[in-house]
Image (cartoon, rainbow, N blue to C red; front, side, top):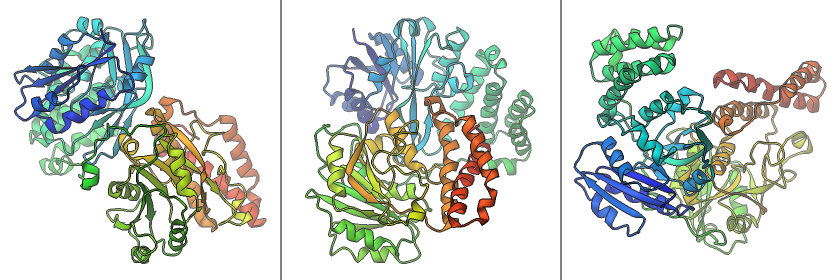
Length: 604
């Protein structure tokens, strides 16, 4: 009898089903069975399953009856101690079942984990962690395929998924568990790790009617439960109202949006929605069908299977893609290119300079280095400004199995690439060493909290991280976690990238020989803006990662810092060094307060 039964319902998903199944077959824990339920597909789904010759795969074929019926068929066939689900267009990260197995508890029949939501371009859209089972809103909002495993006997006792539902059937199951008193820490073992890579498709036109049906079912069949949770009840009325407005049924929209407002009359958003629904012209404009822009992947990216990980540890990269985001970098880029031309690395590598809306001729300057760097390519990222966006564009263009990142205003040492490649043998993600004396004055270096001989945050942070200016990652790992977070405010995206990778089960290593001469901000105004931006990201990080264990700032430290800021106000006129020191503390402290309001958390 296998430990886990993984049920994968599918309908006309021959083009994605192979990725989903292979992501399970490549799990670090091998004690499982895969049950693929074909819900009457008319494409090549059956052939796609049969081509995956593995004794752990079982195929169940049925007439087209809907996704809930397919899940029920899979449960009936399951033989494992625990049953979990994976959608046929999603993928499980390599240690998904291993972590679920580590959380098994004879007294708790439910295991939970989180997921990463990616868009059509395979890049991150959202990070969802389960949080405390006692938080009902988070409980129902994060109960999705792959994020829960139930003991088979419990799932059978709960009864089948309602076969009238083509959407939200996992949420409906979460409500039934709550009604039976199983939404508690005594019944649920929770892993605050994103272990599933779920794909969000661009646009929601097809799901409007299904969302209405699910919300009306929940309000009808679970009315008593929802009345005790007015916020969720209001949300379901709003789901019906908004989707009805999108379909042009403004009478139904107004009726349900009025109920959403009455459920929570103190909240302004439901009232604004209600007012918008009274005018069809306004409603059509407000709730027109939106679509996540589909960013076209280069063929080098489209043709790869991210579930097939290279054999590590011990393997060196076959090709390293060095990616340099550059915005108006004409003044510093030549020195960095000279440093890259002097690398001692003997392996294969390429350089990709990503020109991000430069106006100073950065792109033309970069192309002049093709004689010294024959595998140099200059690509354009002009949709918007942003280092994460530029890095993602460069990663899509890169052909290497290992991606190395550096900045246009720093200098890599001659052994940087060799150090990166060596460290990559032992880790999934690598951070290198930094040196501050070469490019910075003693005044600029004073008080800067940048680790030089270890990973950043290794001594004083919740989890260590690698600087975006000096890091490398295996290409499959990069895509597994959704790339750089373009939705992240300002700098700090390197913290998010490293933390996300570690929580997903990947190893972060340190390459002492991968040395970069790191440039600090020298001009006082520029320094203040940088410190403000870095501190502003901390409340955003806390909002995402508090459930995973990121602590709040110590209240005694907060009071001590503000006391210092106020008592040292005279330092502003007592010399450049003292003014700079005051500014460092004041900018960070003020940004924490502003960020707490902006991201609706308390992180002072």
